[in-house]
Image 1: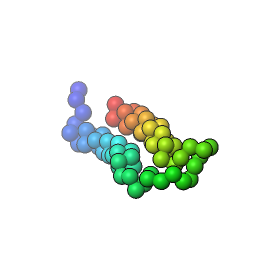
Image 2: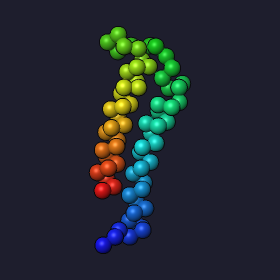
Image 3: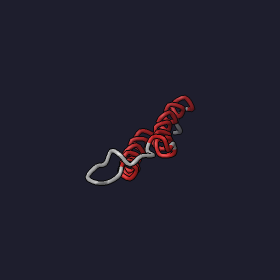
Image 4: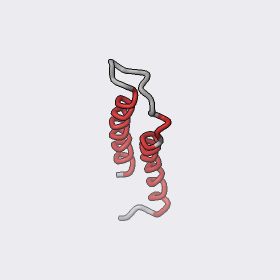
Length: 67
């Protein structure tokens, strides 16, 4: 039995979460600096790597919520 269109519409709302990493990593003023450093690693690098981990977590959340 298929989900009703009304129920499917609620599932698609979860996909909005996937826009967050897209915006955070593609808008340079958020990360275009060297300071602050974290264990000697410039901000640019650890910010980008942190978003890799956050994106993976958000992808899992969206997957679990929509399936």
